[in-house]
Image 1: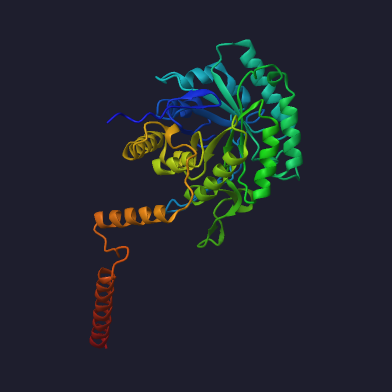
Image 2 (image 1 turned 120 degrees about the vertical axis):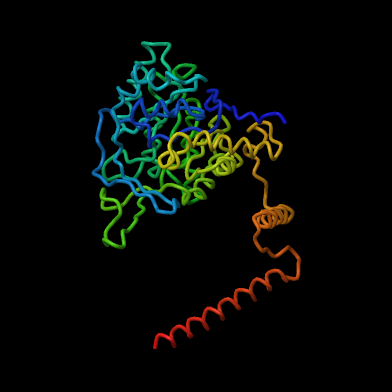
Length: 393
């Protein structure tokens, strides 16, 4: 069997794999990013940068649910500052052991629009002074507040329009070809009109905008420590961004709707709750050109990229897909035939694991037998409990 090809392009940039890291966890230093570069990750995305370095919120500012279903973070964007992430030394240290010459991308998340403009000018200057600079793309975070007392940029559509208009007017985007590809990180949307309003704004700037990454964490989640009777996270009164498997289904809906609404020249990157090759497969099926991994990278480390990539390739080969283009964006409409196929697959999987299952259209004999056995065990347990209670008296 021919090995499935996972290569793709994002914003016109070749990637050896559609799986790469989200900005945030384990991306603050060149030493941390070098581990991503030497893994199967298709790209390296640096920590979201501010104009100057900052330590972030007080600890503890993160929380992981014991079973791994969810994580919270209120980090406050700890980072080394934009100068660090665009410096040739940092990029060289990050990519030194990278055998496949994968792309290095920068993320920015200024506290104000002026901060973001300043950082974009800085990046333009660095690239202009060194044509061999390795910065392949820039991701602008629209999923964080920009003005004190105002909503997150991506939820304030008037503000979002202003940000995109001012960014588009910069000299680095004014020529026939932008100096570098620009992407944006979006917050999750929950109402169809909001998807449409966000997409309309982004589509107006399709001449400079090359991709939209969706989603960032779901804001204002709260985990309670029931023993101490207090929030599990110290920072921000315990309110934090929700990530991990719990957000995957919201992320899938956002990816699919953005792919439906955005201009075809704007790629969609799926993010949120990706823990396995199957999660990545579902994101791509919904239209994602690439998939970012955040929480799983946080908890498992860079080896997650090797595992998820291997799992995705195995799924593709099992289903006869030679490349990711074969199934990208090809989510089928619901059908009775599809439901029956899925049900049969679940029955076969349970049978393979030795479970007792009720076959489709059967008389339920196996299920009835298992219920009777369970009832008998319950009766025996009650009789034994009564016996030991009498003896103890």
